[in-house]
Every structure is written in C-alpha cells, then in structure tokens.
Image (cartoon, rainbow, N blue to C red; front, side):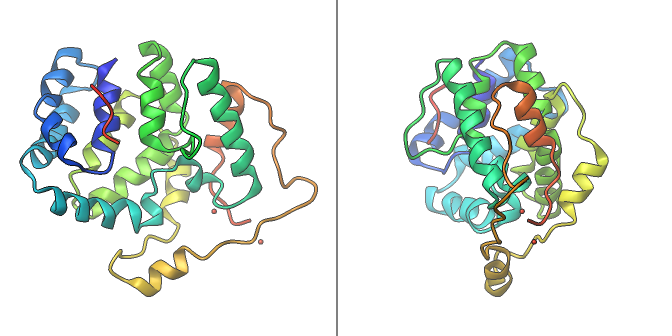
Length: 235
C-alpha cells in the first residue's frame, strides 16, 4: 500500500528528494482512496507546501515541531513510556514484530519511530494496518490536537491516521496525554525542563514481561503516560 509510504515520507526530514517526490503524492492517495476525502483534502495542503517549498525553510519548520518539541515526538513510546525501562522492552517487542514481517531496519533506527512504523504498515493487509493503527490512536490524536493548536498543516497526517484506525481513540487516554507539558519551541528554558531525564525505576514491577505479539504491543501503546517517581521513503 503506497498510501502509508506517502505518509511516512511526509513525516520524514525534508530534503530535495522529498520536494521532488511530493508532486506525485496526491495522485497516489487519490488512486488508493484509503484515506477519507476530507483528510485527503487537508493532506493536499501539506503536500502543496512541501512541493513548492524551499528546503531550508521546510527543514526549519520541521525541526521546530518534531525535533524541539517532546510533546510532538515521532517516537511513539516516548509518549507512553518516557525514559522508563519499559520502553526498552517495548522496543524489543516491536522490532520482533518487524522481523516476523521480514522488515529489516538499520541498527541505529528506533523501532517506534513513526515513519518507520508506517513503512511497516505498508507491508500489511489493509485490515491489519487499520487494526495496528488503532493501538496508538490516542497518541496520534493527541499529537493531532497539539499540531492543530499550532495551526500546523502537519496535523493533516495525524488526522488521516486516526481516521483510518480501526478503533477510535479513547477520550480519557487522549486527555491524559494532552494534560502533559507542551512548551513553546521558542521557550528554551521550558524546553530544557521538558527534556530533563526522568528517574528510571528499578526493582519489581519496573519492567514488562517481554512477551511479543500484537496483544503485548496493544498493552504497551494503550498504557497512558504516567510519571515514573513519561528519509523520504520510496513510493
């Protein structure tokens, strides 16, 4: 499914290659029609901005959103596990799922990176991809809301993912994520505070059991974030 490859590319760091490829994206989304019409129209705005943009301006915008704002992190487990040891086991479980699907990732890539997760979904059936999208739907919905508050056209990607997910995000889980800090990316003091490393808890109950599979991934992605003492793809 090229739709998920397009979404993965749109969430990748802007490059000249991405700008050149963006001109084909709308046609791909229209041909597959996996995304509802309303969300495809919103994505068209973002695609147009990238296709007509200057690479350095696009990179600056991207960096202010996703590199400097922890609340907009593209690493899914950042939102549910923070720096706890549970995150490490969740990474192992997710990588095992990729391995079983025959998807090989580079040693320096983190499995919970959203563009990589979308690349994985492109290898699945439509039904399985929608089911897997439902698991982090509350994370995606919270990021969408934060991007909407910033009036960012990147919100369209997350709105599309939520619209495609087999399960609607639970309001309580979304609200809990939105209650977390969401500092202005230009407020360096607030950013430093948000990025302070949290205490890692050791001992009984500090780490998950490590079982692999969809059910275990569901549990890890659905676990609401709580304090512990929280490349353009080819199309």
